[in-house]
Length: 253
Ligand code: NAD
Ligand code: ZN
Figure 1 (spheres, rainbow, N blue to C red):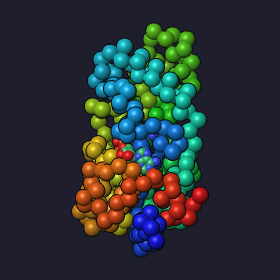
Figure 2: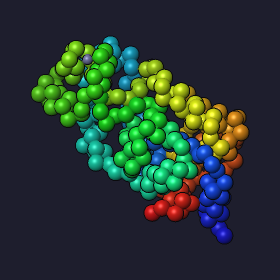
Figure 3: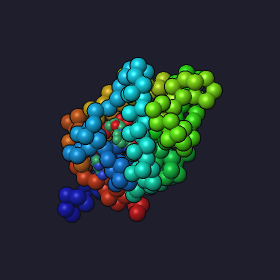
Figure 4: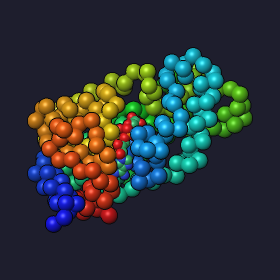
């Protein structure tokens, strides 16, 4: 058996032996759907700095720029569909093997792959819709876009309370969502196998979950093309593409 096949066999064995696995995903699982990650060579941050939450609150120019980027992104990635990696995770959830998917992604592709929304714990929110920062009303992107295109010199405001409207994501400098953080911690502590897919594991507190799982006695497996911050403590590390590796281990195309 070559090393690639033995990696896949080792991963399949860990999955078979587990009763309560948790999957933890980062931007790397969605690159095969055509959405770039941040930290691969050529990733988004090699091209533009993120807009901090404080800048969004304090500057109309920053709000306008943030929406301009969001709609520019929509034209490229709006049609992204789940890939083989997402399908493999969905299969594990439907087989009852995986109890929860903790994701740093904001693209909604786990839900689009068929995983019930209640089993997807979004640590960094969701960019496929927006919310008013004051009253919490949900706004659909198509409506916001129409308003923005009518009045491009003005950042979109809430139709109910005139508050600032922002994608439902967690920006740098914005508080983590408490309920998601708590559920992620509970699922992590209940896991006997913790599988990381496509995360550089350098963004905290998100990267604290695999660490916590390992400390709590779970087996830790990491599939990531490049080395991660936690390779040294993992039980199995596979530096390869997620779709082919997990797809083969799980028997999903
Ligand atoms: P990251 O960009 O820091 O790391 C992604 C990792 O995935 C890299 O180490 C890369 O080597 C690996 N990778 C890329 N494609 C892969 C593939 N097909 N198979 C295996 N490995 C692959 O991503 P992160 O750790 O998730 O942190 C970035 C932050 O940016 C997250 O908090 C997330 O919220 C946000 N983000 C989300 C999306 C999305 O929703 N799709 C996209 C970009 C950034
Ligand atoms: Zn409002």
